Image (cartoon, rainbow, N blue to C red):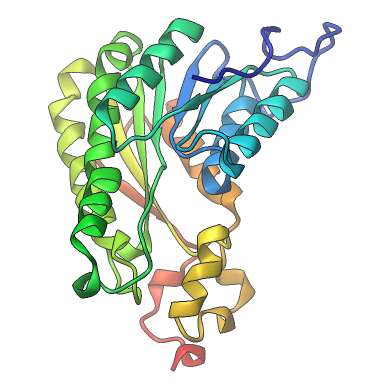
Length: 278
C-alpha cells in the first residue's frame, strides 16, 4: 500500500487559514473512488475534496504512470487543505480489494461513498476477443465492482452510505470495437438489484451513464469509430460534468433516487441521426 497526503484538518491550509470550497456538505465523510488516479475518476476525487470529503484514490499498477498521477493528485488535494491517500488496488483480485478497503478504514476510520469508476478492456469486436481477454473483461468490469460492493457493505451500513457506478452510453448503444459496453449494461442491472437488496441496510445505490468525454481512452476510440471527431463540440462532455452528477447522487437532494442510472450526455443520445456520422 502507498499512502500519501496530509493530516491537516479539512477546510484549512497548513497555516490554519480557511480554504475556499463549493461547500462542506461532505465534511468528515470518506469517499473511495476506484480508478481515480486519472481521467474521470480524478475529477470525481477532486470534487469530493472540494466538498470537504476525505478521499481514497486508487490505481491498479505500482510504479507506473497512473501511480505518479495519483501521487500528484494527493499532493494537489493536500495543498488545498484536504486529505487524500493513494492505495494500490487491482479490483479484479478480491484480496487486493479487501486490503484496499481495510487500508482505507485503518486510515480514515469509516466509509461513506463508494464510487465504482475503474474500467479496463481492449478495443476490438467481441467475436475476436481471446479467452484471456474475455476473462479479464469480466473479472475487472463486472466481478471487480461486485468485490468492491461486498467488501464495503459493513462500513457503508454503519454510515448509511451510498454507491455510485460510472457507466457509459456503450451500455445502451452500439460502439464499434467496444466490448466494455456489455459489462456496463450488466452493471446497470447490478445497480438496480443492489439498490433493493441493500435497502434494509439503508445503503443507496445509483449510477451515472456518461456521454463522450475526451479522456485517454477517447484517443484510442477515435481510431475505431469513424467520424466521431466530427460531432459538434457541444456534445462532448467535460469530466467535471460526470463528477457533478456523482456529487449530486451522493448528496441529500438525491434521497428520492434509488436504483437508477442517470444519463448525463449533453443530449447526445436524444437523436438517432447525426449527418456528420453518415
